[in-house]
Every structure is written in C-alpha cells, then in structure tokens.
Length: 222
Image (cartoon, rainbow, N blue to C red; front, top):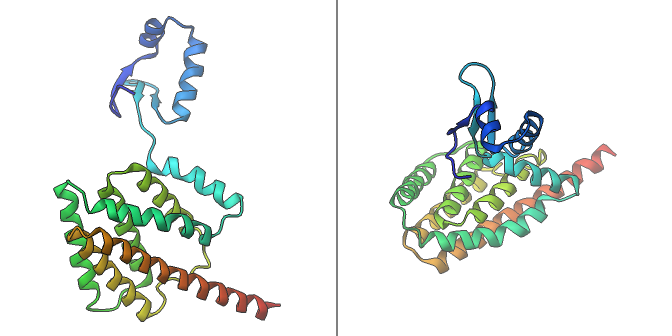
C-alpha cells in the first residue's frame, strides 16, 4: 500500500530474503495479493513483483453482477441512486478544484450546442453518464463515484431499455443538463437538488413507458 502503482517491489529472491519465508509460501501469498489486483507478477527478463491497484471496473463488476443475479431491477437502482445523485450535485457546488470547474463549463457549452440540432440516443446516454461522473468527482466523495458508477454499469446491461428515443426526450434531457450545470456553476445547492429530482422524474416516466411497451410486446407474442 505504501508503493505507487507500477513501483518495483523486488525479485522473488529479494522478497524471499526480506520476508524470510519459503518459496511456496511467497508464491501462495503473491497469488492472493495479485487476485486483489494489489501486485502484478511479471516473469522473464525485467520481471519481478510490481505494485498495482484495482481499476474501478474491477470493483464495480462484482456488485453489478450480484444485483443482477439477485433479481434487482432498473427501478431498484433508480430508487437508490437518485438520492445519491442529489447529494453529489449539492456537494459539487462546494468543489474547490479549478480543473473540474473548467470541465463543467465545457460540458455546459457542449450541452448548449447539442440543443441546436438532434442527437442520436447513444450520444445522450454517453453525455448523461459523463455528467453524473463529473458531478460525483466534483463532490469529492469516492462513495458517490462508486455507487453511481455501479448504477450506470447495471443499466447498460438492460437491453430492453429505450431511453432518448424521441426528439422531445432528447431535447428535454439536454435542457435539464443545462439547468443542472447552471445551478452548480452558480453554487446554488437548492436548485441543483431540484434539477436532479426533475431528471429523476423524467427517467421514472421513461421507465414506466418502457415497461408498458414491453408488456404490450409480450401480449402480442402470446
């Protein structure tokens, strides 16, 4: 944990001497730590033991898989992530990192540009995810970043979802993105919270509409 990712920790002989353990013990321990993505073992010339860190995707896949295997629905995820998104937006208003503020200004400009024409649904999905991630990062709370990312990872596996399918949907999404950006840029926590709630209501309406569509299609197939 004291080493930075990529730091050389030593060769096998180095660590055998440092820890005063047998080769089987060292290799078994290395397998356990490598499984947690805390070290990387490289073989051959220039090899040895190197510090590593788990990627976000390594952390996220397991809970997303757990939720799916235990019958979680996108509605369940929405119910949990909506209050988290609210608190993340409120906390983002207090961000002190200039670079993140600049990213939000750039996102706002992109959202305003998007209103000048029509965009494909996959573009809006990407932009919604981008804004949620940015606000979570601005919040300074890694727990917001983790749980919001789990929600988006879960949602991407829901093949039946048909978000942003109409021009009206896409325009409404962009308008709410703009309003949310403006609230955070003005450091208005109350309005930021309201904007998140409006976005959540919009998504809830889409989920109901999508459920009705799937139900109709199932009835026709029967």
